[in-house]
Length: 139
Image (cartoon, rainbow, N blue to C red; front, side, top):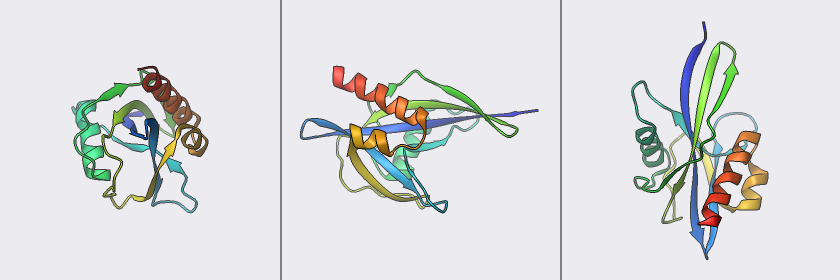
């Protein structure tokens, strides 16, 4: 029997000199960690918005997110006997100042869209940041 887990992916953006910049995080785990985005588990009975708030405030030290964008592209994938549903969201950070990273993150950087896109390892992450970029650029 497969175990079903729900996870969030949060693509945090800010505006610097009028252009959107995206937060990339490097994991502290692994031999050659790649750049990615904020992610975390959704607890049993927990709302997606609550999980996002917890990860944003606890893992990177930003204030409670106010402007969440549902990217409307959940993805189900299987890893061994686990099925994982990822829920990607965009979140605006009014300030791109210093962050207070949780121990699971080794480093961070803000990147313009092209650099963010090419730095993301997973195709699903690249598709999500493209959708977010399109949505906020059209606004």
